Image 1 (tube, one colour):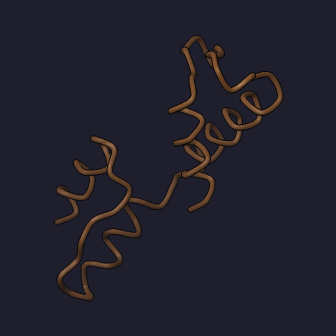
Image 2: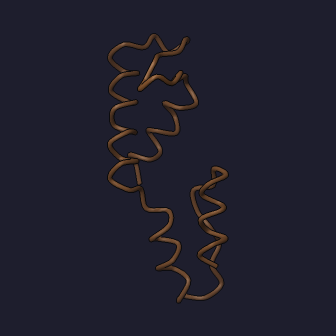
Length: 79
């Protein structure tokens, strides 16, 4: 079950259906953002909101960041 949850997170899902209460802790441990993920999300949101016009793209750590990255970062921060 936990392996399936990790695979789901890897491909972009942000949760997993559980059928038994004992599965809840595995879902929480897999889908709770790590400190590194929170840090990156915060940096992306800050960069986008301070320097972006909402229409283009920005560079973050040598990678192109555009609107979908910003939206995902906001979702990570909301968890």
